[in-house]
Length: 389
Image (cartoon, rainbow, N blue to C red; front, side, top):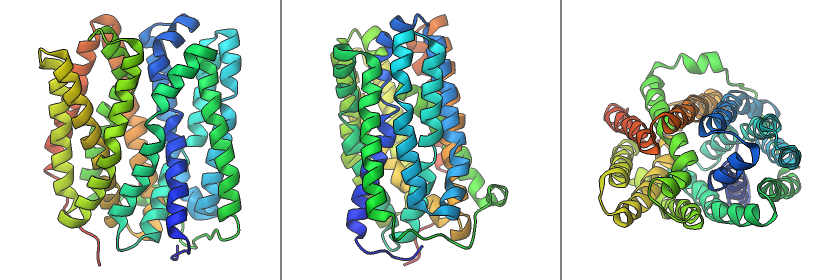
């Protein structure tokens, strides 16, 4: 992929696409109690559906990277935005029939189309913004996080006013509109590569296996925290439902500077050091939430530390992954990494849901903290490679 003109505008559009892609999956958590009540299901059931959808979201990334190589990155992103947006309209039928099966179908279809985005966008950025890959990854993340930061609060407000299904539709419409903008902006200058990535060949890169194992550990705490934080604050920490949804909005808000800091720091001191520091911050944040007697202090530390540290790790990890993989395999490699994080990592949702029903939500967060500690230990074993200038 050669350097393109108007890269700042393109990065802005990618940030918006990144935002809407993630928005689709942070709508449900603040509305979880309402959705479960309406559909008449338990935490275990709703977490099982979320796990399947998240697994599909990760699995589809194995196709997204190579597809971007074959038909062009921007065409793949347009398909992802348009059809994931259209899939949200099935949620209206799910709300009308109060059927968990229709809800699951809508969520899975959203996940299938949305899964094409991340490996495609990361591969595009790593090829286009050479010389400042980590910073560009960070700015891409900032754009995504800035847009998604208000999603839990907006989704909750729409959900309690019009019905939870309309929260999904509102963000689906935004995805469809942006797909048209992408088609107008990128449609004429999309290019494909003659070197197509192979998933099998990417798996043979032994130097990536430590990074891959580390990525699995991140996914195993990330997906559980994402799904259960609002309801955990509501039921275990007696936080008002609106404030519980707003709390996760604040986590996302803390991630805005986190993305920029992580990208900048990775270019300056290397991705490995940033990843060690961010994993330590995540562990401290979860321990604070669980064990500090004052709930206000514990929740406050969790919001700031988890938000900054979790989102700061993303540009560091994405850039390090790019540095360790050849261009012809990069789309496939990013697909594998997204699958292991969001696909395999989704298993934490069903495990956390089972523990929540069988014991308590505190037990769920103990498990998630263990996964975070494992990620911290693995971060010390990561390769230390920087971009060739």
